[in-house]
Length: 246
Image (cartoon, rainbow, N blue to C red; front, side, top):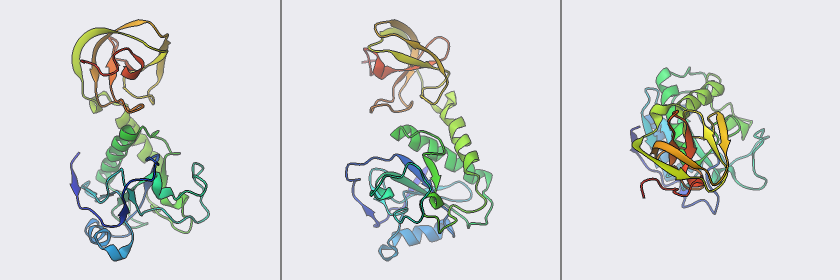
């Protein structure tokens, strides 16, 4: 996924001890080029982490570990995971999308957004669901943002399809055996807790594996998952060798 860094002065360094827990979807009410200029202008006083063009190009304005200024005003919010007396900018990532509230989303815009959402969710262990991927209007009800044409359920479903696709994850083929430290879950065909549960294995068991991926769902800072002979995955952090190959 190619991402062009644009940058913005409108941000706060760090997140005051918070971490990204949700993604807010926005509509630009304009063009990607215009948004680049607006977010680069200190006088605008606004920004987001990313902007996506209608043909799928992705621009980045603020690092994910820093606070962008995209969803800080609350007006009759309906988002059920809103934190009391905490500005949502501290614990969300904002993604802008080219167009207006009445502009239908192109297939390229959906695909690029779904791919970026999946990557962010995997990097920060954010559940890929509608509780954690929300429209701006769920925080600020006096806006229609992200518009009347986007299907947020479709967007989340697309991100989940990527999230559970074996092609998404790298793989090192090197068979071996590892011992479980605690009870662990075997997940069906994908290195993520979003995949269906196959079975649970007790701690102290020895499990054979065919290899591992290093870019599965991050759990407690560890994105390594072992793959068994059936093509199912289990999280390496629950084993005696949490970093495979060491």
